[in-house]
Image (tube, rainbow, N blue to C red; front, side, top):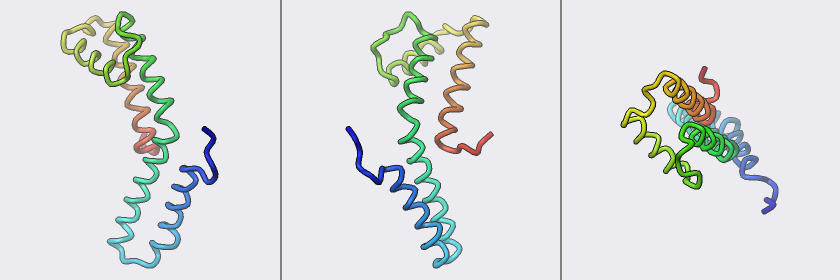
Length: 121
């Protein structure tokens, strides 16, 4: 479906700019601080809208590579539940399997941080 302009992302940009430039200078320090929190929330929502679908698809591919005998038609939540079950049962105690798991967990965490706080290093 083709979306009209402005897009949701553009609307969020405009809202954040309005809060930062028009509202923040007119309020006390406590409210300005709360406006910064609101602007950060807007940024998280915006990045999630832009990145989540791709990040979820990439995470799903990594999960399928970690568990090639798993259900390839399962959704991300089901695959993550299966991963937890396999971790608890000791399936990743082999050093090579453990390294693959660690690589997946680091990549997943980095993707989530990229959405939540892209300045985090």
